Image (cartoon, rainbow, N blue to C red; front, side, top):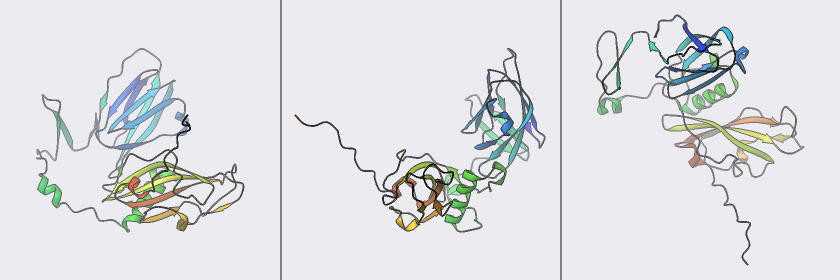
Length: 264
């Protein structure tokens, strides 16, 4: 199936999962009308769609995480027993050829392209940024956490990274009665940004001050300047931390858990 700037029709059968191969890391945008009707999962350039009930044609947006390009899908679902084959999307100007070993090569502009050598890849310069790296990382993370899909600015080379942190971090703000939970992280040009949820656990208002943070961070930015008392809509915000290298190396290690067993 070739993407030529015309929305692609993806019919679904209720109760069956259909796989869409995009071969690009994408995030999926969808309208709220599909909540509880369509399960959407995206991983490694593959999108998994499973309808739990019938619905009329509705548009999805697949956004390339690297360059911001949008691919439009018109999906619909109806009951039945028809088996839907997986779909592979080829972008405009590209032709994919499968070899006997199931590996694929992609060519464009009508001529085959050899993969770049290691020396050529090493000589490539990082994409020029429109702001200092910490600003770009923080802005990208904030747009992902708070903004709709269409407002996320494309940043060449940025990629999500897995979090190798505990589910709760107690060493970051030990002087405040807050809980800190890692949410997501991205890396670009050797630096990382991590988004953490900060929630007030006390009845008193908390003024957020980056100077109380414990760890080695390039920059620290709170989404809001203060937290309301626990249980109010204002008791939670997001903290963005930019680090040099891997995010987890910038945090103070959590204290060891003492065993509750007593020696006899």
